[in-house]
Length: 342
Image 1 (cartoon, helix red, strand yellow):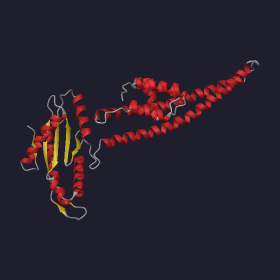
Image 2 (tube, one colour; image 1 turned 45 degrees about the vertical axis):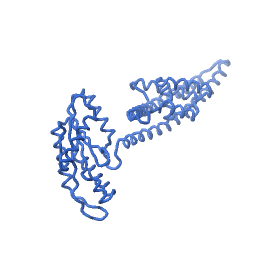
Image 3 (tube, one colour; image 1 turned 180 degrees about the vertical axis):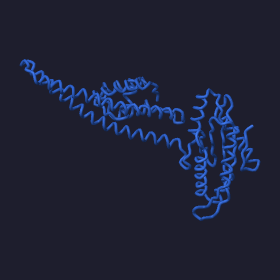
């Protein structure tokens, strides 16, 4: 999905879309607005051709045809491409925001035109007219009334569309949040880590200081085998809560997978990140745990940490690989410690 126009251009495309939809009696819902917004932005030339052919054939765009065109042209995504999916989400959110604003403007403008037309005809009716003009005026009045009634009906559709769009906006926000959140711990996931790293590199021209921490709960498989996966999940949740509490902005804690967690530390040196990791290590190992079901005391939970920093020209995987090697060294040296990447 590709929409790069500014807000003025976007509003102009939507203003063109509305009369077309009214003319062809196309329901003003978010899907149809997106189709005709795309039509006037010429984002998908092949879509324009098919919409023209559809209007020529049917005199409108039937719902089933609109849905098929939307899926075929606008949601054409590589299912394995996270970047493309994110781009689609952002673009569609942009359209929904523009629709919400433009619907208000459209409703206000069309109501004004309708009322002005009624007033003008009423004014004409107060003057004496030639007998030849009277039938024309009567016909004009009848046609104007029909236009006003159609406009009133369309206003109702616009109001319904506005409600639908507001619902869609909320659903888009929820879906984005869910897509970026680990459901067990409530922490951000790897997608957020990637996005923030790339944004940091772009904004700082690859020269900003940034550190990375990876942590792994020690002997977690043995712990799960001994106490069960439900207790294991409780521990993972608690670690997530601890990281949220201890990691204030700009630190970004994420669930990296399994019993692994990570911290992205923008504007931190490797020494500062080492101190953050050590603080978390000490607090975690000092906390008492109990099995909520049995009341049984659980031995202290410890974690090992690897810390690295970004170097010029690094992609995120380079930073992670060095931190991972440091983590392995911490495990090999006896666990429950922090090691720095070489």
